[in-house]
Length: 339
Ligand SMILES: [Zn+2]
Image (tube, rainbow, N blue to C red):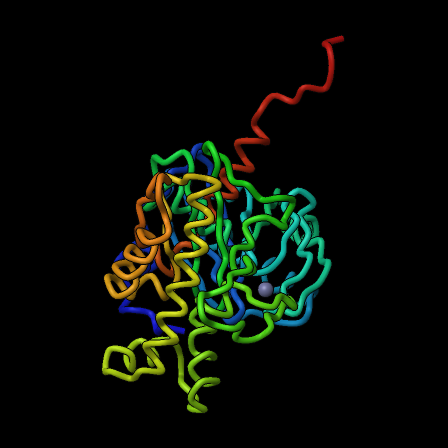
């Protein structure tokens, strides 16, 4: 994976966070569960991030993780008596059924079929909303970041794997938890055979070609030389290494193909690229533009832009998620005609 560029002010907690656009105007706890670190944050009713905590994620134990999250929420609430949280928003990496609040499969966390939403609600006494991290980060970009103002947009998160969030006419499309899995879009790069079977079993998934992890693995397979991450491959390509240039080129070809399919079907106004790879700047966006131009004809050209939020996107997304839940809970309940 490409090492992160030095943290931008927007990534620095807590003072560097932008004021969040909370509609319900009530304090919330934001939980961003990662494969390595879990961040929890308390956000007040004005959208100010008061505090962010980060600790290693308890892995391979649903009970252990729930204990960790329950304790973190209680600690944050106790530290800020003036901002009593009204809801908790949680994002996890993996397949999530948002409607049921269940983690279907999170390989990086070692979890399968865990009703995390209801169990965390029981532990904290607060309403909880649970979602997938890439779709959450996409929502942060859609509501407050690089896709703000668009009606139809795609946010592609490129890291170890590839995730996405697809917004159509202002709404996130989640396909009951199975949608937006752009990393597993089959792509056949011209002149290349499939590099390797994907973890999902697919013969030529996008993330095997174009994720930071996929680029590093492709280079090692081609040359036998191990690399620490895709940054090293990009550096080698720039220094004239033909194998590295070929691997990077294949990744860009695959990504351009995927964006072309999205442009054909959805005609998004904006395509946001998030994750470590998006920090490659012109090195990524210029050749991607070029390749896309070669593929598109009548299609509407999406604006291709880097994400606004970096490492802080998960916290922002989870706060927005909790806020959306409070909005829904505040709606008048239609239970039938008045007596
Ligand atoms: Zn796959």
